[in-house]
Length: 193
Image 1: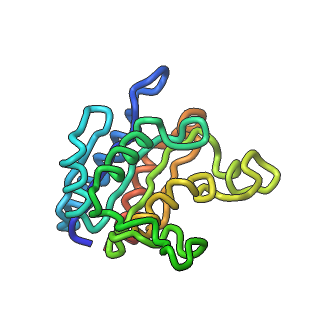
Image 2: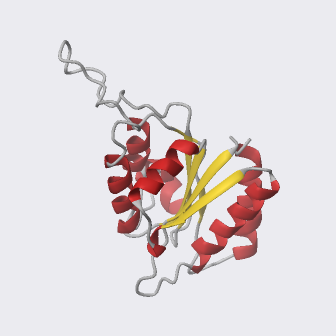
């Protein structure tokens, strides 16, 4: 994976300034640059041109989303970004939905064209990790990736495959920014090869 697209999906809104997500976005940029990766970036809240984003996706081997967890998922600007960019790819991300008229009940979601590309989520949540992994806690033990199943499936639809998700927990009630940064660097070094 030589060409990496970093997408910062933080949104300045209410009591959120997006500072931690910007910090982690910057950590990824610095770490990957030191690893001799070609890094491009998009900060969604600063604006973007859809056709430029399509080109960035096509050039990238890996797309890393940096985003907070808002109301059990990604901020609306991330969903808007994905809707606009994926829908404007003009047959470059997917040829169709994968089905054929001969058997329309089979192969839905298998028409993606980006099979040689990967994506990764780097997430920040106020919820403790136990809220995701403990069956007696809020998410019933399903884990963070099941909370983001819709986003995983959107990327699978266009042919991409996932690298392991990185998550920072307790970011408001018990922030450990230095630990988050060190753990993220280790995650990137381990999985972005």
